[in-house]
Length: 183
Image (cartoon, rainbow, N blue to C red; front, side, top):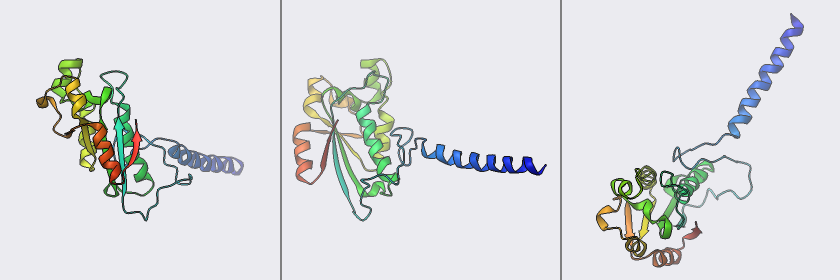
């Protein structure tokens, strides 16, 4: 009996450690979920400075998703950066994030009813835009691209602001110290 107890004890310890290791290798969503999955890496190099009170970031979203029923991958990266900062101990209240859609990314700003008329499916980005707005992200669409796509103003998602242009918006926020992440 005694000889069987030791291997079972060792097996139990290995199983406990392996589940902890697997948990670290599993993606997580600390703030925005289920979008923006990340892998926490607390020992990785180049961690955000926790003493910094504010991080300013502007994303320029220009790519469409692969399919109209898929969330725009550039918009999902906005969720990902919020989750990355959170995993490093930086709360969303310390982030000032702007996401400006233009070009092929412009339709992500449509109300779901208009999106469905155009693409045959509900807007998969609508829920994510609401979640992003809830944590303080400004989602903006280029007014020039909006009109080039022949969208009317009534079809704009109420959680999205329309700018004169993505070009000018990008410059204005960079002049205010925002780091540019082109997508």
